[in-house]
Amino acid sequence: MGGRSRAAAQFLAGQGFDKVYNLNGGIAAWQGLKAFGPAEMGMVTLRGNETPQEVIVLAYGMEQGLADFYSRVCAMTRDLEVREILGKLARIEEKHKDKLFALYQTLEPGTRERTLFEKKIVSGVMEGGFTGEEFLEKNKPLLDTVENLLHLAMTLEAQALDLYTRYAQKAEDVQSRSVLHDIAEEEKGHLATLGGLLEARA
Amino acid sequence: MKWMQFLTPVAGMDTEDARAYLREHKEGTYTLLDVRQPSEYEKGHIPGAKLIPLPELAGRLGELDSQKPVIAY
Image (cartoon, rainbow over all chains, first blue to last red; front, side, top):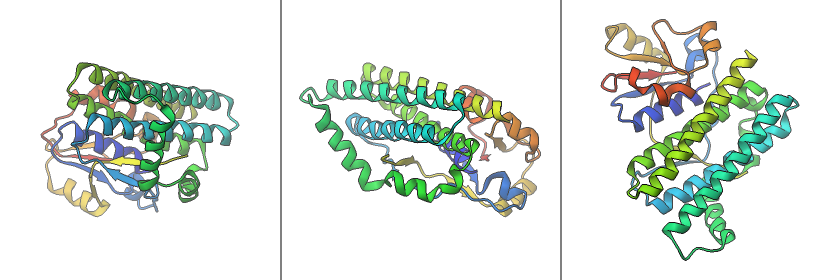
């Protein structure tokens, strides 16, 4: 499973580590077994000079993706404990969306209608990303067990953490920085929760 | 579900290249980083790997030398 290490490598690179490599195929490849990483998904490479508004739009799309992902996964598993936690995580991502919209409004005071704001998100995300059906179809082999679902969720959370911490460092006004830090902190908590779930199942 | 993944480019290293790298470079000049969970690490890991589970990475950056190359798995 290369997703988590790729996210880790990405995070370290963003934190100023000079040379970071992701071992292709992870330990499975190392042991000579056939490995399959997550299918390449619709990707958007960050330019690094996005405006705060652009970052919020990206982040909002990501939160929406995370929330939807958790809800879907929740529907796929019967494990009550896992369901409860995934439901909780999905609700927190919804709260992040509220925070991000509020932050956007402080930067763009003219924005009143959330539905109009969301239209911007949807079109942006749809251009570069897959729809859920395509994503799930492509990643079917990775979504067959709760463990694999947890791996994938951790990969996504680490990427969210990466996005927020890097942009918090760059954010010029104190309020934006503090909102981004708060959200990053909660994503960190999510990672810990997911790691704990994975560990508990081992 | 609307989907996108945000990636900053990160170089990949193939197993063969990694083996060669570890052979040719002295211990202590690089970090081999295992970001899986402790239970996965226990079942098997690459010799010499340092374990920092992904959830702990952000809080334990101080344990890593940013000047040294990192190979993560």
